[in-house]
Image (cartoon, rainbow, N blue to C red; front, top):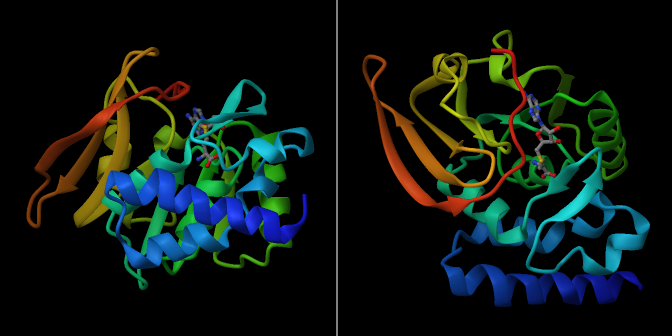
Length: 214
Ligand code: SAH
């Protein structure tokens, strides 16, 4: 398939999967129009990359469904000057979308091989505002925090306190919380003063588990 065909598939993904479901942030939609999602999966899966479902990326992990990436990103209300922490680099696709919208993305992945592969793809695409770490993301990345927002792309059984601690006042966090089979996608907002949080359920979802000793 040539690039113009992929570009057509991207436009279709936007008009059929994202816009009808309420994704209307213009900067976000233009990031989805730009980022070549097919390069984040292996060659034999490229023709499926713009379909309305998650795909396997090896190591028993997945690249999330386009709509879920869009919903999570839109819910963070990303701003140009902000720094964002992502837990679960996976393929690197979500990191690329974020890197189009904010100043700097810090992304943590438990499986080193995936982290290195994502970095290679993102380097090749020219992203120079992403920092990578391999390790347990439930501990966050305290040396680089606090963050304007945090996105967790693996399912936790509860909200990791270390992540809340690394969120700025009025910071947002999107995280799937529940059991391994079914979770609620939560939008957490940290209060302006103190350590209180507000919590809103965005939808039901099913992510791979956050594997953590924290
Ligand atoms: N954001 C990814 C989706 C990744 S799937 C993308 O756009 O492709 C979730 C990822 O979280 C997997 O790669 C998994 O290895 C990773 N993960 C699971 N537990 C983790 C932990 N404790 N710390 C960091 N990464 C973790």
